[in-house]
Amino acid sequence: MDKIFIVAAKKFQDALRNRWIVASTLAFTFLSVTVVAIGSAPAGAIRATGFDVAVASLSSLSVYFIPLIALMIAHDAVVDEVERGTMLLLLTYPISRLQIFLGNFLGHNLIVGCAVLTGYSAAGLSIAILHGMNFSDLLSLAILAGSSLLLGGVFVSIGHFISMISSERAMAAGIAIGVWLVIVIIYDLALFGVLVLDQHQILSDELFQLLVVLNPADAYRSFNIAGIEGIGAVTGLAGFGDNINAHHLIFLMILLGWIAIFAIMGFWRLVRYEL
Amino acid sequence: MLMRPSHSICGNQFYPGVSFADVSKRYGTRDVLRNISIDIVPGETLAVLGPNGAGKTTMFKLILGLTRPSSGNVRFADDDPASGHFVQMRRHIGFLPENISFHDMMTGREALKFFASIKAVSADECEGLLNLVRLQDAADYRIRTYSKGMRQRLGFAQALLGAPKLLLLDEPTTGLDPALRQSYYSILGRLRQSGVTIILSSHSLHELQDHADRYTILDKGRIVALGKFDELQHIANLPTIVRITAPAASVEKIPGLLSKLNGQIQIRARSSDFVEFRCSNAERANLIRILTSRNLPIENIEIEPPNLNQIYIHFTRERDSRDLTSGDREGGSAHHG
Image (tube, rainbow over the protein chains, first blue to last red):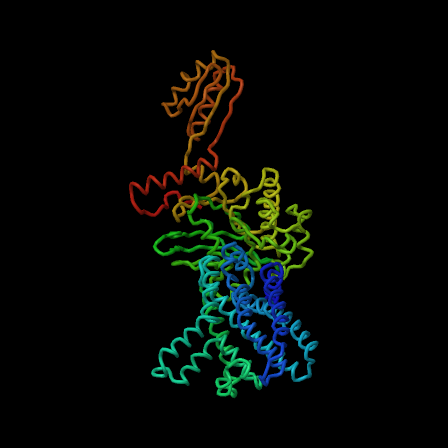
């Protein structure tokens, strides 16, 4: 167990020395505060509180940023060490591949956790100053942060798998960018495109909803939107949110499922890896 | 072949050996190692020689369990390195890979402490090792500022963490200047005396002379020679060079005197004040006996026996020519142990 922590601590230390990761965390923090401030502007006739708007804005920001940070950290976890030759040396030490894998996973999730904590703390502070904050608000923010950690975990897991199937760092970076684009941006656009063209002929409502929430970014979005009363009015997803309001657990299971599937596949590749 | 147990226990001391039994390794369609059989007994130092791509590094990887043999068995202390539980045995092994690399952003001390923590070795030992490899003054600089030689020394320090019983050193002196090489070999000498089993490979062949108990020459994945230095010398039967410096009158007489040796001694070079011969090891004594019996005014006799470099070239060339004539025959004629 202690070896897992040794590797995790080293990964954490490596990330702190990576200027890109530090810069993206700072950018995420800055944008979190910004969306909270902008979201507090008078909202016209919409019956949403300033806090709800702020949380919705934060979750929208997170759905783009957290996968990006997680992939940036994790996409070259193994391929980078293999290319440098440091993995060869590590594998000759009394440490199992499972310990290396879990250490990497834990270390990278800790970094994502730090990014989330930094961004959300700053955002929470801004909300408290602008709107005030009671205990239930704090709890909502904590739940949003917790689900963001899960979203980060999904992309750390995918990143590790990418790092195991790539023969070089450049390839891993390319795949990571592609995965981010597809899951976070293109998937929804494509699905809506199909929906418009299909005119309900093949895609039933149920199948469409299933396809939406199978995407981890949408599962995360749905989890957070469904949790906020009146938020449907803000996001324009009111009907959708009503239908899936009872399915929090399913959204969480979907996120955990993504983590588990890619973690298992990544570990399987690492075990079979011959240097 | 030396037949001793692959590991022995004396009191609390654990001395593991390494054995390869008919080991072949294939990557795709490429045979990297072919039918390797060798026992490295506890406390022995084996030098593995061979051109690039001969399979030296693959031998190390098999001992470490980083890759599995395609056929045959590799054992370290009677254990299979490719098995899952072998992980714990690795605390007895120190490995210095060829072209060692570390995380550039770490300092030398941080990197050594990281590996020490995985081997559950105390931080005090790290300081001792940094002193041993003379990196104490540079220990707090980032590794990216290190020269090749400094990285190599840090690599050597990490290989020595936890007082390993088996040291695997792949091209260990790359990038070291002559003074550092000398201090490196003196450390190695002390380790040999303390009973550590050492397997080292090198391209600097003449350097390894006197630094190993046995030598094996690999070529195209096969062992083409294996034995102690004088055994290899004997099998190769390479000529010794004898250079005699003498006054001009004596130099003129020497070829005539040596004609009695039935042409087994060839003149290699000659001038007014010296003559140089090439002769077999067996003829060397006769040559000197004849020269000294005639009371010629000889100023100097220099004898240059074949060195490891020449022996190495002999065996790898022999293999090339045999490949051309007899195809894929097992290269065992020079096999000796």
